[in-house]
Length: 233
Ligand SMILES: Nc1nc2c(ncn2[C@@H]2O[C@H](COP(=O)(O)OP(=O)(O)O)[C@@H](O)[C@H]2O)c(=O)[nH]1
Ligand SMILES: [Mg+2]
Image (cartoon, rainbow, N blue to C red):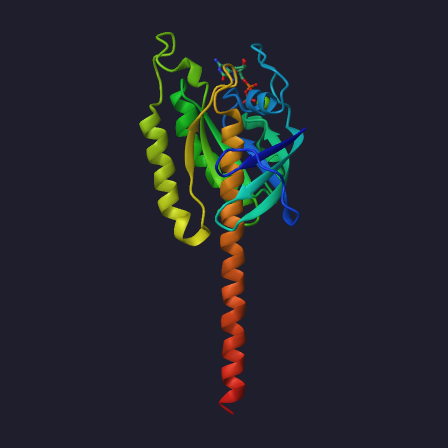
């Protein structure tokens, strides 16, 4: 199955010249927050109520074409999705999977405040261990079908999620060229599943375009410096 998405959310035919990006992403967050459920929902594999713990890591792949209106280009993303086991005992093996990741969905469960508090460490590990520094991420408040359910009184508000995302954006936007978004999802009710991956795709492309611009500007200014040197002789 191939997903066709655009920045306006409408389908359009793929243009002839497209940029292909191999896109390794990781799904991270505490055990039981719903990482596997969201991945399965995105791949059309249905929702399970029983909890089958991921052992070490699960792998899935999915393609998506994305039209980036700013650069008027189509990007073919081949997502390689590493769904990492969240339990502390998998830490050693999990750390190896971060390498080369250029995107992350960072999950907390809106009905579990501890999972929200632990996000800081998850994001730190992702940025420290992927080998390219501060790469794009989306903060995912999962299980939003449980919002305001009296059986789950210890909830994290949407305001908190948004503020945290804005805080991270302030930290990186000028240097990395991407925005950190907050999105609430429900794998159970099928809420914002495509959207979570779509906005991650958008920010991965924004970051890619930004880094390309930085590289080009650096090259141009170095060339100019060399030309000036030779002329001044
Ligand atoms: N109510 C609700 N439960 C969910 C949702 N997503 C996952 N779960 C449940 O939460 C448990 C853990 O889900 P799983 O995807 O395996 O978590 P993971 O450890 O992060 O991969 C399972 O019992 C799921 O049925 C959701 O959107 N809503
Ligand atoms: Mg899992």
